[in-house]
Image 1 (cartoon, rainbow, N blue to C red):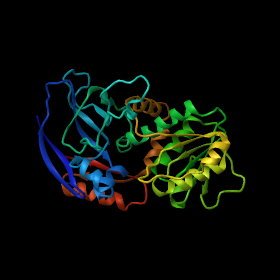
Image 2 (image 1 turned 30 degrees about the vertical axis):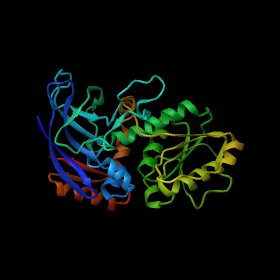
Image 3 (image 1 turned 90 degrees about the horizontal axis):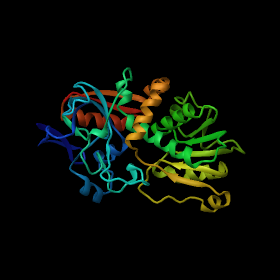
Length: 341
């Protein structure tokens, strides 16, 4: 089967390339329908990754958040037309200790391997999950992003002590919104406080117990545990604020990405006996548990719809470029490409 792959060959330049897909194997062939642009995709598209990284990764099809419809399943387990979530992480070896998303051998789409900007995508059978009926397709498009928060909270639940009266979330972007929403729904007895810097963004956190500007945190504020969802140059300041506020033996989850080393107050980490752990990406089980949570608490999807900012139909390469340009100009939220290729 002839397929068209839309690869980024250099910053801001996408070219169509043709390749064959084997329809006689075990893989499921999926036609993408809704794709969500991630900040990581933008860093490649805009060329703001280090030059040596761009030389190593490109050419490459972008996008690792998306859903589609089954075109062909050789085993007929998924009827043609079934709406599915595509899992971008592909493990290639088993490990009884290390999760699939942390194995150095795993292949992650749109990070050295072609992402979902293709006419059709050949997906390994265990990387395809049926989407429950009735879920907003624009929200479903960024299931991968939400699954990262789901994964981090699962790790938090396993590592943090059981005093969880107050949980602080630093950040006011998409990751902070999603993480604090899932925390509030999964731990309804806990108070979830947001610490951000943009009032217009924090106004969307209507489910939180309170919001605070990072330059005006009340004297004596304390939290039991914290989540860093800031990234980039703000990581150091946010983690150090958390260290100041957190009670002894608390747990700090770091989720933000920075290209630089981050200085933190290790003296107080030691004095308070804190646990700091990082989380990145997710695995198929995180997708499955998240979709089950959607079934149990459908209001989560309604809240998530608040961060959909732009929905753009994509027919041409020019539409793809326009989608990335629109996304970079927005003030928060997600850009969804309705894939009409």
